[in-house]
Image 1 (cartoon, rainbow, N blue to C red):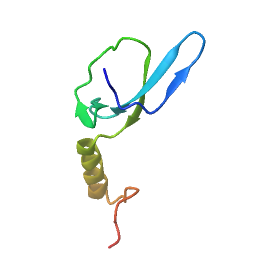
Image 2 (cartoon, rainbow, N blue to C red):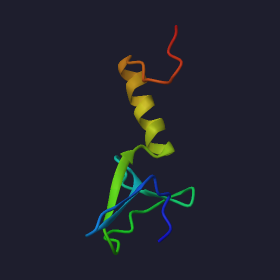
Image 3 (cartoon, rainbow, N blue to C red):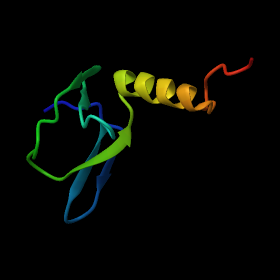
Amino acid sequence: MNHDILQTSRSADWTAEIAVKCCACRRVLENGNWLEDPGALPGFLVYSHTYCPTCLKDVHESLDALGVCAAGTNCLP
């Protein structure tokens, strides 16, 4: 699979590729698209977790409902 790789670490014994995964819905970023988690992938793949755009919007809405200002948003009254 061709993932949006952040970094590849190489050692004498292993290679690790780091892919981006949503920490809420578990979708994986591949070629600029958020896809359902493909499950176990061949090789040694490490995930860096973030929010996909849909889940990030949900998180911001939840924080807004609680009266909490999320980082990077305009929460000024």
